[in-house]
Length: 255
Length: 245
Ligand SMILES: Nc1ncnc2c1ncn2[C@@H]1O[C@H](COP(=O)(O)OP(=O)(O)O)[C@@H](O)[C@H]1O
Ligand SMILES: [Mg+2]
Image (spheres, helix red, strand yellow):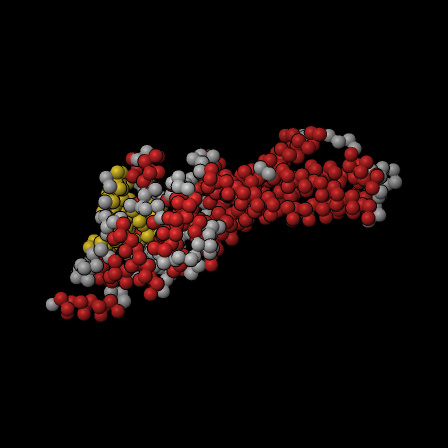
């Protein structure tokens, strides 16, 4: 379990996170949702140790991140996979080299062992023949899959995804969402996903944390989000007409 | 205040280049790639500019020597002095601040805005070491570039002088060999090493610490060029007063 307690983060005078407490469980896809600019990326980067924060604590399965020794941090980092919003593939490396990179950093495997593992994960994300391509030659959806492959290649215990389906067409977006959920299930890992996409909320929101103005405004799941009366949440969820209709149908069904 | 802060950050970055080194198996290909991009990739333009500027220096010198009392070997002598002392180390470095510097800033800056640097840091990599150290090592070969510039500059002067009818080859070569002071070479290569260090680190600083998106990458490259050249000129002045003054 990842536990976050009273997390505060500022940039200069701008107080971005104002005390967030929540937790994320194993084998679940945990969603952080909220409008653009609500602090989702900053929150995720604090979890990953990319940003320092002023107050609060973050613990991974009981180990408080900020209190780990450099070696322990390194060991923990080897267990973390991250999918960045723009994929963040290394543009000077081929797709196969990108996926192999964490293995070269973290393991002492031989070249052929690494190549085998790269084949396995590239197959897993349905990219069996993309090895030699450069990231710039791949479509957005393909880059996302490569980013996922790179994130899971070293068998992580924790997977983080920042808006994994932003910039993708709705169909590809669902494929990516489902892929992340299947992987979470299959490997029984803790997955935390930033999203502002209502499709994802419905599809894979096993746990949902709603951020607004640097605070946790609501917490629940895709089962409960359509029933809540919390105005901040309903405002966000039903900003589109489609979801207003979905809610009406949903409420009628459950009556 | 902001300048002080930037200077502080720059020196912290310098320290970080040598901390927590990246695995050698990962670092080696990066160094080779940077040698290719920064050193090999610059030879063409450096050779071209040196040869022709050397020619121009020789022609100008001889055109300005109107008095018949001046010895003929002076053309070769003056060309050698200006090329070894200033043209090759300093002015080639300013050109490299444009070519290599903006390449470094924009490639590191792009990695910053596309979160590739975050991707490195998530894996616990010291991104400053990973990105800047190979450039630093590649640029230790920079004195070779400057040697080539010196040689081709003097050769360009010779060719222009002889084929332009400004003097004989013998006179020119006599001038090139005349009154040679080895310390001038030391001075030139001390400068070259310092400039190489500036060329590797200042553009890296502007790329690494940039904020914003693709548009800002362009702006950062321009700022980086301006400050790298300003620093080269200032350091040149300091070293010259220190070593020759
Ligand atoms: N490195 C940074 N420096 C200063 N401000 C930042 C930085 N990163 C994010 N912010 C600010 O934090 C706020 C939240 O941003 P972000 O977490 O990216 O939102 P989102 O929920 O869309 O991911 C924004 O107002 C943004 O301007
Ligand atoms: Mg974001």
